Image (cartoon, rainbow, N blue to C red):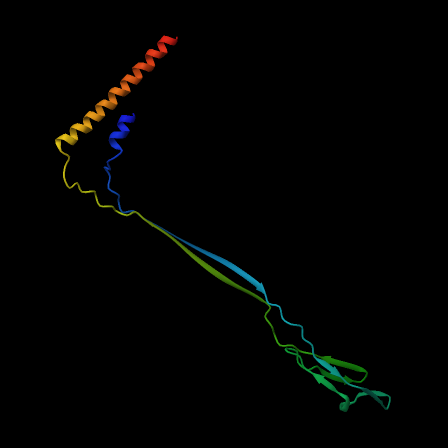
Length: 155
């Protein structure tokens, strides 16, 4: 078994092929957020006089102030009823959006050129290789013979 591994370990019989693997992954994530706005207020202050038993707003005592997005309050007095209206401009407080992630995985197998042999082995080099293999085989046979002989002696 070891002899066979030694014989084929140094040579390559296959040439690497051109192999391309491409994987494209698209991930979409929907995100949302809350947009926080600063608090806002508007202000109205006036004095009420009683003329002929009926309440009346004094126009010269009015104080008005608008906010960032709140309008100035409108005040009406009809009989004994006081009406105050305050309007605000529209705001969007909740937003959603989508994020898209694209991940590409690409692998390639590189074709290696075959190794060129400049000069073939000489007769002397081939003889040394085969004698080395023969010596390896003979030493393995001798070791196996010794192990079997030792086992039979003990039993």
